[in-house]
Image 1 (cartoon, rainbow, N blue to C red):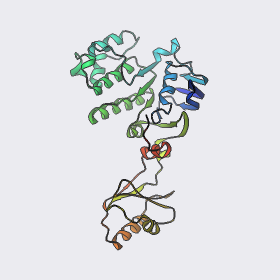
Image 2 (tube, helix red, strand yellow):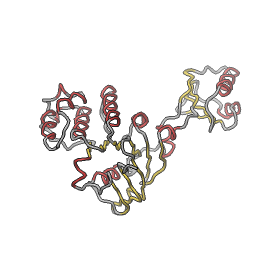
Image 3 (cartoon, rainbow, N blue to C red):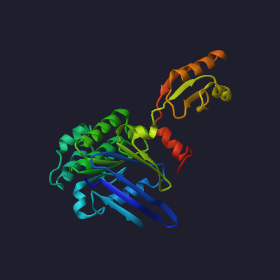
Image 4 (cartoon, rainbow, N blue to C red):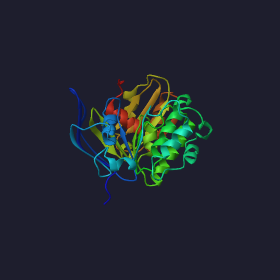
Length: 306
């Protein structure tokens, strides 16, 4: 049985009277993409920084590739992508990667890596003049240039346009195919759902859910449509099979499902018949699967976090 990429047991981290991480335990498998998700202040960044060796735990144990975080033998085996900063502002992108490559025994080719992340045309551009998305892509290249066994990616597509985001997803998928373990932190739920083999959701420093994206979202699905605002939801619920749920959010947008059951022809017929009897025109009628974002909001709430 292979050693996990990351193994955390009973992790606790306090800042004064505030507890940022409260008895957290999780395991990330080797060769997989594992997400640690949570709202602002949930403790995910602190957890990842402890794994990277930048902070020390107050209690519990953390092992990265079977070793104590931050130890000398571990450093060449781990790549870290910072969310921002860490690169000299006046250094051109190409020069930075070439210099960084000299610190590794078997680095990737800097020119090929620039092409992979779409920065060949910006090789002579100083870091400070790159766009936010380009800076993120350079940080990603810097994290993987040493051929690490494990990579920590913190908000890897922040500030990227859709084309750059999808290209970055392909790079991350390529890391998995090459057997590299990836620990991903992101606020972009579609990113986690598309890329990750396993997901941990934490809030207030504690685990609130874990599983594969498919197991967390389920397969029941939802029936969605648009119509005039303020439909009688009690009446609509009465037309649905037992266990039906109906909600309007935002105004004029309706979501229907039967808890524990898939959307089936009977549910669709009941809704369309109800609408026909009342002269309601249901626009954009569609069946959608529950998303990871739906699960995330249900577990962590919808209030704004600082």
